[in-house]
Length: 135
Ligand code: NI
Image (cartoon, rainbow, N blue to C red; front, side, top):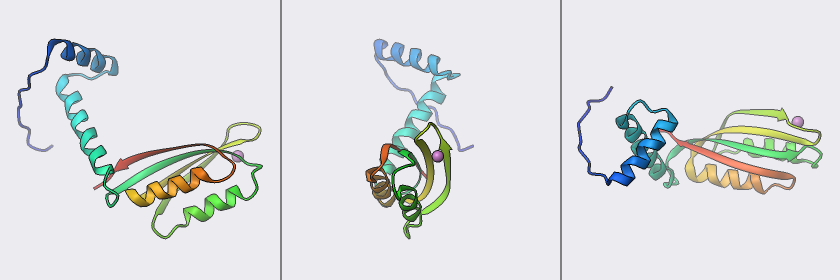
């Protein structure tokens, strides 16, 4: 573990009360761990604003498998030269609907471009992207 430093911060009563309630609900053992996670999350979000940053993304796509050529187009997109598809998973979630989870590794800018293209494909009913910065 990295060397730790102790820091003191001032927080209004009301704000601290709300924070304590939240982290208690989430199951944090103490404030320090919760605050460290908040800092990491904020730093990661900052990194994800940078198109050239490295990231891993999970793209969730719900689509009707009857849509012509959609499966083929999804595969073609995953063979993009800028991104590395780590894995993809296909789940049949209904009579018509399929869920595809695609894990991609690459630059934030390229991942976002790819995600937009996938979600915009004809036949895609729902699309969601989750990014995690890697360094
Ligand atoms: Ni299916």
